[in-house]
Image (tube, rainbow, N blue to C red; front, side):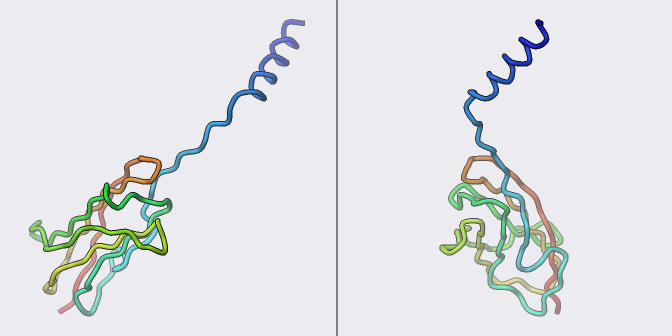
Length: 122
């Protein structure tokens, strides 16, 4: 009898408990230049596409060369047509290997970070 009572009580408790919203993290889905790619000319910007909408004002993106020197970049901005995309204007990049390091904050305030490299061909 007590087992039946516990089962009924647990079922009732779960059925009236408020639903907890799911929270996800903004994971990098794609980039332009693409991860590991070689581009023929220096790109004017880096574009990052995430799995969730991000808060551009809270996101950071940096670009460094193979020696670890910071490259000139602008501030990351959101895409007015897609809240999951960040754009980062780039200054001139001579041929070489570059690493993009990003720190994203999704609209539900979860933080993610990562990095990838691309190459500018001579």
